[in-house]
Amino acid sequence: MRGIIKYFLSFIGLILAAAVFFLLDRSLLFSKPDPVWPLGYRNYIVSHQKLSPARMPDIKPMPDISEFTMANLLARIPLLQRGSTRIVSMEENPGLSKFVEGDAKARMQDLQGRGSPVAYEIQDGVYDLPALLDGMEKQGAMERNGDIYLLKMPLHVGPKATLIIRGTPGRKVQLHMSSASGAFLINSGLMFIADAEVSGWNDDDDVVASLVNKYDFRPFITAWSGSHTYIGRSAFYSLGYLASKSYGLSYSSSKTYKERKKNIPDPTGWVIDSWFEDMYYGFYSYEAVDIPILRNVYANNIIYGIDPHDRSKRLIIAGNEAYGTHKKHGIIISREVNDSWIVNNVSHNNNRSGFMLDRSSVRNLVADNISYENGADGLTLFESQDNVIINNRIYKNAKNGMRI
Image (tube, rainbow, N blue to C red; front, side):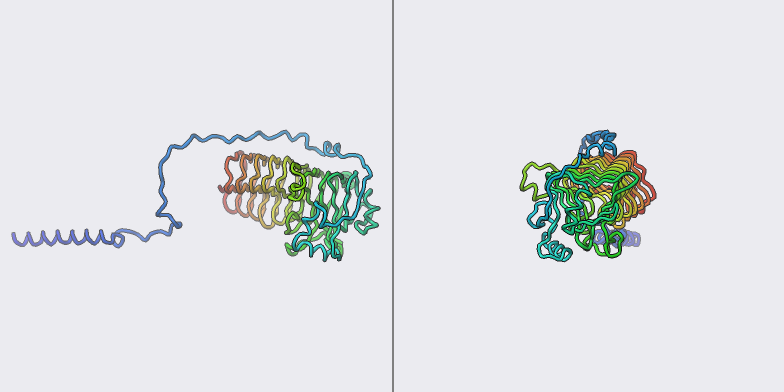
């Protein structure tokens, strides 16, 4: 009997010792090593709360785009009317001073070979390239060879002026803008580009201006506050580089103009039925409004195909194809690009995403698009709520089909 009690007490002792050991460090007996969780994992608390019923955001239906045709664009072009032109100081002109700020001034001084950079300005009137030629040739600002015009100085369309760059469907007018002499095109008034080819141009080799270094100057087109810029059935090659508002084709509000005129409208216009290739950005906007971007091709551009930015709104991006973008995305809207429509586009074989909605871009409709064989996601949404994403075809992308 005494032996049984002894064994029983030993058994109880072992159980008590094991219990104490377990309480002191139970992980040694039973636990596997902790997985590597994100920082703060152990402090994350999931609480249960009553959620509101899901609702569909209020997205306006796709607008009627039947009015945005070449016939209607051409019908808007006014008759020629002689006005006044002049050479102006870039530093003293509100439409040009942006491009001689900081380091840009030294760049223009080098390109023009003069201490105070200048530009040719249309003050008022309605001009086309032939009507401008005589005055600009005398100033060394333009040359002509048949249907090819070589712009050799910045050209500014003033707030009261109109510029028409127009050929015919069978005979496009060509405007080459010299990279060697620092040419570019600024619109503060009304501008039409129809049945034309516009290129950044390497004068020395007589070819388009390829971009070797992103900071090297290349010609560009920028439309400012208060302007209307209508583009149709045209081709644009090798424009833009990494400098503010110099990205290729840009519609941008102007701080300088807004300070001078309190209620100046945001830039607008049309971009339809055109081709954009080897642009730094195929399309860029900043606080632009009501622009139809329709039936264009954005091929092999450098950073983005289509990139509307800060507070642009009511844009119609429809029927476009974007492919071969070298660095980033085919079609992206970013920073409060709201109340817009991205419909029936095809974006493929871009280095990053096919489509992206970024940084508080809300109340947009993304529908009936196709996105495939892009280097990242088919469709990416970052920090952008209250959008309707419907009936898109997304396949064979390198990372995610859709990432939110």
